[in-house]
Image (cartoon, rainbow, N blue to C red; front, side, top):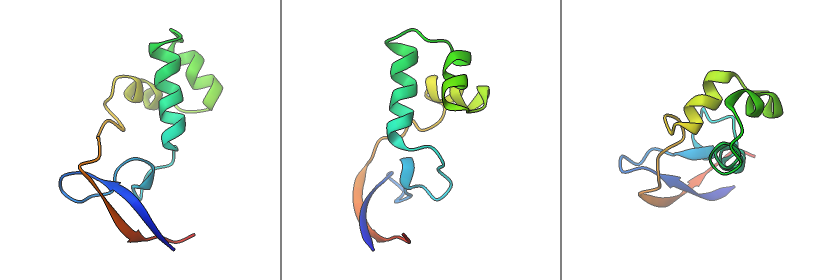
Length: 79
């Protein structure tokens, strides 16, 4: 199957299309909304999603999953 995926300025896939990503982009957005808009703590978010505390903290502080697409490209993907 061919799919259009986001890549950074070096041409590396980013977001949920990166080969090591395990959290969907929609979940990352929900985590950030819960913290920034609803004022939920990292611990409350961690419990809801069953994720490690450091992962939630890094997502909320934009230390993880913080790149924006430089461009899009068509790639062959499995499944």
